[in-house]
Length: 202
Length: 202
Image 1 (cartoon, one colour):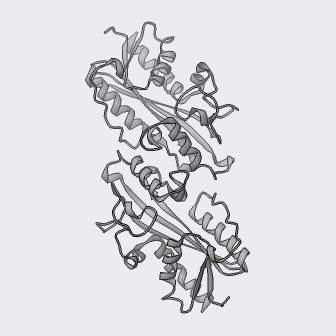
Image 2: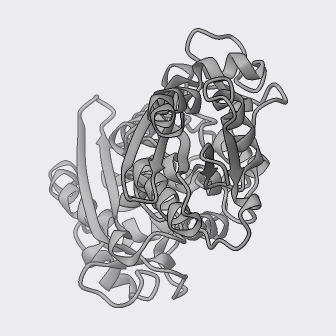
Image 3: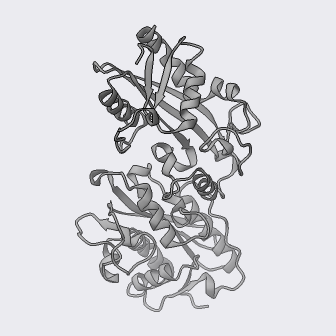
């Protein structure tokens, strides 16, 4: 592996595509591997109560398994009317089997009687970088907005079709990839991480 | 209607049975009517962010509609690992169609990876009494405990099969009605309300 290889501790192709899109223009020749490229790797159970805790858990496990600098994020939608939930449970909010469609439908049902002025929410992301030697950094990113009353758009993933960022009239599933990166929680956290990666990899 | 008639602003037969069981020994000759006994009554949408707010909303509407002293409760299960949710959304947590089975299954799925020491929860109840003249009282009751990993027992209703009260080894669905009343959130709130009802009705 080259000196410019980093692992993203995720099987989520959507996240991998987003990460490469943001990182490649910043770090020439960087190679981002996902867990599907790694072979045998037992993902830890994401049982921490915070995004930071889960991101560190995953990045540490990937750094140990691969001996490579490893990034992991934990992200989710924090809805004020749900006291900040789904939060760390965003991906599995609707129970089993996990599905974006199921999660979105449940969230809309739960918020059915919540009036517009109380439908505020934030997408939050904690991005952790763990080096094989043990050094660790966590960066946070937030995108404030609100949960609309039905899905629109077919871009993005997760709760994107329900979420309208502050200052926008369309959902984050209706934004172009580059427009979304510019404001997204993951984009913000990742850009905050870039200087650390540049220092490490260049 | 007699001087000792009160309305419980609920269609929930389980709540009505509980209320009669607790109130009848305390207030001789009291008659408790439910919404099914009232005829035309448009229930307000329970869209308030607090139990107190929803209980008052319902009791006010019933007092206006019937001209009788009206009680209403809003109750729910507040799970610490869900930042206090399902809370006011307890009855509709699993979305549509509303069902205890669906709500319980979803809650178990959401908490699947939450370790035992973080499965603490409280059943909370706000009980409101509103008189036709406009006087209002709210009393609160809390039952602390934890969410177990599967349902046990066939008594009670709602989340009772999943909830183990502090100091107990069995779920609240396995307690006798009188044992449950002695410790339950609704029992506590209602007993706190009894002096107000006695003053009013006796």
